[in-house]
Image 1 (spheres, rainbow, N blue to C red):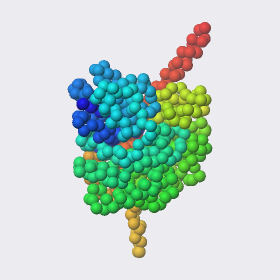
Image 2: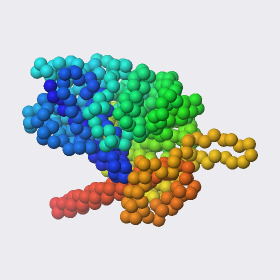
Image 3: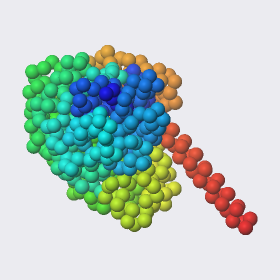
Image 4: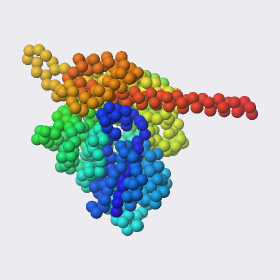
Length: 528
């Protein structure tokens, strides 16, 4: 059979980094690792193609070639996914949908012929056999979650690697914590399952053999969910890097209790981890307790972030507005915390009740769910009735974004981050303080292109030229030792600022439409 694997389009969000990727000549941040893994599970006799709609068009000739369509995606990709499914079904092509979206939406919502719920390793063989025999079932769902040791090497041959800014590797699935709003633990469970170390090293060797030399994202939802296994992999990575000249940097996601383990942070630093995303959520401890984010309580959040930064890792942070415990001062508190933390990339979103989560079930029981559409937490609405006035919540959210992505505020956070992650070596007799990070060259082939585009778009054509040139002067003088990192942050800031402007305008339009509807309703009532 000819299997066409399709990855739907992401809408423009803060997470896409669409406007920053253009500086680098890239089309998307990461390839569709799930589909690449599914492709490797399909029968050897099948012919396979992959179309990532985020980097290329889905052409009619691709569809004419196919016997079956396999799609995967997340909730936020629903609109694109359904459009593709309907296009395929109009041509009589059978469609199979899997991925996280299949765990939160029904087969009817997805418009698909067949749906795979959960992880695919134990399901693909049966699905493929049934498709060949014309006896496929509407729903495939494994009775148990598979062990990661059964996951094959992803099929790299299906993608154009140079279209992406990072490559992806998965080590574990699952998270031991129990956050009320999280769908990860519902899909992958609370017992972290990991691959064998040899599997990860084989994936890295495959990337190296393919010529990859940029960063690698370890896409685990919590890399340190099982600290003992994480340390096992890190020891192997340190040894592997010592034996190989391939010195790529790693990015991952973790929980804030990383700050409690100096040995773990030191090993991550030695293994080449240069950035980590943390779910910080809120500076309000009452909100953390109410949402069962207990791993972030009974600690100084600011001190924990600074500790992780001191081990040479940039901290990216996830933040949420809209908890039942939020008060009117939460917006000012959020801005103050983000500025003090030195977290340049602070992803602030409105709380969404994802279908299948504890939060969704609670709010459903309380009669507060408005609809099931919860994919985009950086939009202009929530899908439930919040305790705070909804208009006040959205306006407060807009004010937070405008303040933290104001150029001066953003560049101040970047300089705090650079000072902590790339500290100046101490000088003086007898002082031999070791640098936290090796000093990269001032310019490389990769950051030269980004710098030229940055100067043109931000320094010449941009709306905040004075702020930009002040920051660039600091990067050349005070932060010369980490100039590449400084320019990377300037470029990423451009995307965040463009998205803030777009979102702010969308919120203004929504508010204006709501006001017009209110006036019209009042006029109608008066006429009666």
